[in-house]
Amino acid sequence: MTQHWIRQIEEVRSHLLSMGTSAEAQVSEATRALQDLDQTRALEVISADDDLDAMDVALEEECLHSIALFQPVASDLRLIVAAMSVGHELERIGDLAVNIAAGVVRLRDAGKQAGQIVLPACLQQANQMAMEMLRQSLDAFIMQDTAHCRQLIQQDRELDQLHRAIFQWLKEGIQNNPSDLDWMIEITSISKHIERIADHVTNIAEIVIYWVEGEIVRHRQVISPDEESSS
Image (tube, rainbow, N blue to C red; front, side, top):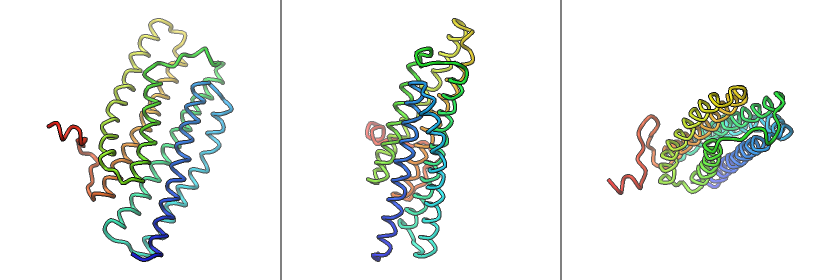
């Protein structure tokens, strides 16, 4: 492996990690805006989306340049393909953060203030889990930790259950306070965006497994190391 190729790989990794940091910040700011019904913060998340889009385009161009210039094979090629794919997933996560922020803006436009809306516990738990999963997926990419990636894929099932729980919350809320229907539907939509963030984190975990092990696990049932050892 030449020094030029090593530098190129480091540039791609650095670019990807910067993008990951930005995506994580977008999600964090969007969820803080949701907690406080902070319209100003929500609008900042929306306006920052163009930066993440530009980073995604730049990363893809860098990856395509690497392939054309160095013609990598085997694990080196998988690394470049993985980096480009992870970049696309991070861009979509940024879009979902924007969707959450847009929901906050709609709630404020409807006259809702902080304290008027009590977020359901299942939503807050799902939000915390999605944030932690995103952080751990980026760590797994850095460490090439496929065992951790398999654990993240399993965790996505738990988050799906939390998202399903919000429909029971919605049903009970409509029965008890039908006048709250509009904002409760908005919260349910936000829950779906959070659930989709976790789906994209799962995709990142699957991409890391492909890069490190050369195995495509997409559309397969992935068994975590803990489950495998207990079977």
